[in-house]
Amino acid sequence: GQSVDALRRTALLLPRSRRVGDGPTGFPVNRTAAAAGITPDRTGTGWRLTLRAGDRTRALDRAGLLALPQHTATLPIACVEGWSTSQTWTGVRLRDLAALVGAGAPAVARVRSLERGGQFNRASLHGGQVTDPDALLALRVNGVDLSPDHGFPARVVVPALPGVHCTKWVEEIEFDG
Image 1 (cartoon, rainbow, N blue to C red):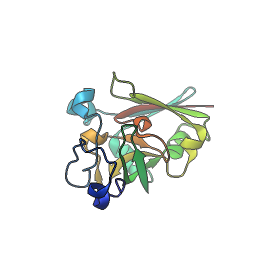
Image 2: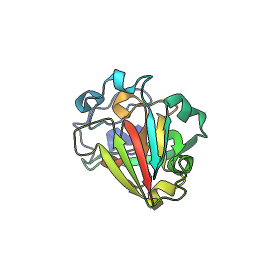
Image 3: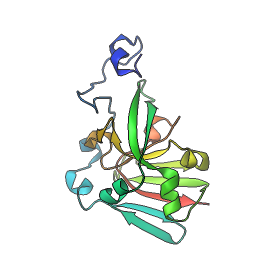
């Protein structure tokens, strides 16, 4: 029941201490933007996503990402702290971002966050995760821009990937192999 918002209050094993907000981004957050040191000046008009593959580099601002083909998928996030949720995410497929820097079907993608500290400011994705048709660099959730606490300006969302590896506040993705 906790993955379906309408049934969340009936979920017997739902951690009751999780505070959940209202509106389309009203689902749990473990680490807020403030706790991660993510301030609006770092995510505003100066923010860029850097894509790398070998000696090829490409930087895109949020408008450039929104101009690329968008894909929408309803995907769950299961947290190691005991909660799960299913949301509708929209963004650019990771495989399309790899193609932009000539990576084709990479063996690995290393994702790095604006967050400088913490255990989960980076993630390593294997090739199958990158090429999954629903693996996204999400820009929107449930029809609205991501909130700062949910990773604005961009976060990774990959099917069957634990929530701690769905890196928020993404600033760089490096594709290898």
